[in-house]
Length: 231
Image (tube, rainbow, N blue to C red; front, side, top):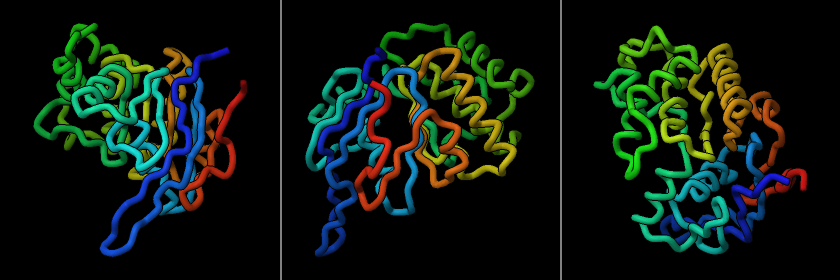
């Protein structure tokens, strides 16, 4: 039986809005096992990105606990969360967030250079990942010289730079055309197959989510199906 990489128990997140409080998440329970690819879908405002941010240690819940690889991250301080993010989590965002003045190779190598205990040679690892993602001939190009799909594949390579066991993707195809989106999904599936990386994808696109092993549906801050996978 695969280990549980993500466990959330009774997770709630309240957001103040003037004199009101928005209940972004309302007691979420979920488990995701090592090596799974899980899609999280739901309408705009359902709490998908909020949940992903909490899983990734970018924010803390109002109530409840979140464990990553058996470690409770809920009450960690920022230094501890930074270490968890650097060692265990890779992030992919809708708008790529690449550094425009750096080449694809330099963007991917950067997280390794910042790692507290680097386990790879930065340039060697970056070249291997870009080659794996079909970008061998684009390594020396800056983001402005790449298509949207190519930029997103560079962002995937960067997220994988330190070989994290968990990859979190927030609308990774939301800024791409259909063909580029399919290429990105194929890349994520290949990464999962070849390395056993656990992949969690937040998307509003049901067709993208269907490429995952399992789909969770989030409505009004509550998961209504798919919260647990095979035991």
